[in-house]
Every structure is written in C-alpha cells, then in structure tokens.
Length: 99
Image (cartoon, rainbow, N blue to C red):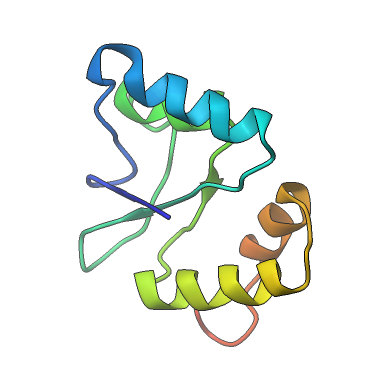
C-alpha cells in the first residue's frame, strides 16, 4: 500500500520510484495507491506527478482508509488471487469501505 500525496502524487526520486514500481509489476505484486489526506481520494494520473502510478499499473485505492485497504488486501492475498483480480476487487465497494 503506497501512501501518496494529495490525489495520488509520488516523488520520482530520480527514477527510483518508477524502477520500484516496474519491479513490483514484473513480479506480479499488487501496489495500491491511497492518499494521506483525510478527505477525498486518489486520482492517479490527474497530475504529472501521479501519472507514474498509472504508467506502472498501480491500483487506485480511491477514498479507502489505510486500514480498509490493508484488510481488503490481506483478505484477497489469503485467497491467492493475482494482481488483476485484486485491481478488480479494489474497484468495487464491498461493505462501505469506498464511495
């Protein structure tokens, strides 16, 4: 779970962030983007600083809290589903965890 700034912005760190995300994607590791702010959600790609996330297939956590994201991710990981299924599950609201 990647804690982002604002609507889903991350620093590039001279390419280190992109390299990390590329390696995670190659290994089939799901990366969830969520915001640190209390109101609103993520919208990766809305700004240039967040387009790095969409370029690397990072899953949009929307307005889910960290705790809800963690619980949902643990539940899905226990079922041994792949990153594509995790992305589909994070797009759906199961129990009021996202609007």
